[in-house]
Length: 137
Length: 420
Image (tube, each protein chain N blue to C red):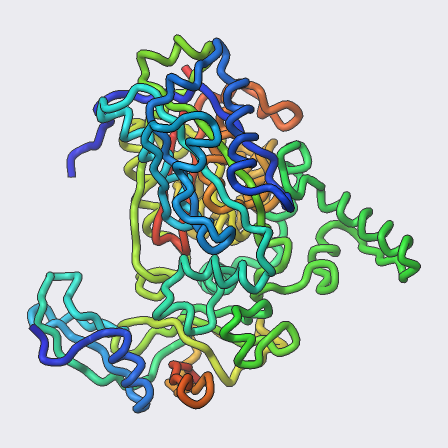
C-alpha cells in the first residue's frame, strides 16, 4: 500500500498549502490528478505523491450566469458571472477549475489553448473556509 | 469481447406518458397513473394489468425534489401491482434508459414474460437554485462541482471546445433549439409546445397588455440572438439551448417476443441495447464527444446488425443543444466535426435525411429527468406505428433509435427498435 493517503481530504489539504499533489503508480508510471489511491490502469496499489507545476492550458470553458448556491454565496450571479473551465496540465492530467483573469463581458475573446497557471481561492469564512483550485490566465 | 445477444428476444406492446410540464399539486405517483392509463389504452388487443410480473422505475431524485425516497413500490401500489417486485433505477438523467435496459434483461433472462418499465420525476416544486443544486449531485461533487460547474456550464464547455476544434459558429446551437420547437409544436404532450415564432407573438402580446414598448425581431434567429429574449445561462448556452425543469412520467410494457402478437397488432421489437459508463468530464481524452455514447451505440448496432445509416429516426438526449450535435456524431449519423453542418443544413429536421427529435426533444417536450429515457421510447412507438399525427414521418419508417445520457456522459444507453 501507499505510504501516503490519497483522498479528497488530502487533495484539498494540499491545495490549502498551495500545492497540487498528484499520485503516480509505481508499477506503470501513470499519473493521476486529482490523486487516486489505486491505479485504475494497471490495478497497481502502490502510489507515490508527485507535486505538479500548476502550469497548463485551457481546454474548455464557460462563463456561468446562473450559479449554484455555493457560488451565489461566493458573490456570483447574473450581474457578476464567472468562468469555469477544464485545464490540461503540462504533466498530462486535466482538471475542472474556476478560471480567472479573463473578460467575462466578452466570453468569445477567451481562447482555448491559452496558457494558465494555478492559483488558490478561498471560499467560506472562519471554520468553514476552504481552499479551491483556480487557474489564472 | 464476442458479440452480445439477448438470451430471449423482447417486444414492446404498449406505451403511455403523462403530459410533460409544471403541475403544482401533482406528485410523481399522480403523473405515473396518467402514463399508466394511457399505456393500458395503447395495447391493441387489450391487456389485463394483473399480468404484469415486475416493475422497473427510472427516477433520479424524488429524494431531493419531493422529499420522497423509495418510489418504486409506491408506483406499484398506486396502479394496483403490489406485491410484484418493484425496483427503482438511478443513473441521473439516464435513469429511464437504464430502467428500460433492466426490463429488457429481466425478460431476456427468462425470469419474467411481462414487465412494466416506467420513468418518473417531479422537479418544479423547488426554487431554481435548489433545482440546479439537485441536478448538480449527478456531477462529481468532489472535483467538478467545486470548480463552480453547473450542468449548463459543463455542456457549455463542451460547446466552446467543439467550436474551437471544428469551427462551428454560435448560431448553429440556436438552430437546433429552433428545430426542436418546430417539432414540439406538433406534440400535445410537450411542455413548451410552441414554435419560436409563436413565442415571439406571445411576447409581443404580453408587452402590449402590460403597456410596455413592443419588441420587434426581424426573424426567429434575431429573437434567439436577443439577450433580453434569450438570456445567457452558461455562455454559449442560452435559455433556448437548455431543456426545461419539468414534471412527468412515462410507461412502456415489454413482453417476450413469442407473446407480442397476443397483445399487439403492430408490436415493436427491441433489436439492439447498449450501455456504458465513464469518469468525470475532465478525465476524458476528448471534450467534443461522449465516449460512453460511442460504446453504447457500438453495442446496440452490433446486437441489432444494423448500421447508423439504416436508422430512420432518433430521439437523442438534447439536454442542451450542443448535446444533440455531439450525439449525432457519437451515434455515427455524421462524421466527427460534421454534426453542426448537418444541423445547419436542416438534415436533422423532420423533412431532412436524418430526422432527430421529432417529438420536440427534451428541449421542447420537457425533461423530467428520470422519465426522459422512457419518454423517448414513446416517440419511436408512435412514429414506427404511424400514430404520430401531424408530425408523422413519411415513408412508413421501420427502424428507430433512442440515446439517453446521464450526467455529462458518465452513463449512456442506446436502444434500437424495429417494426416488422
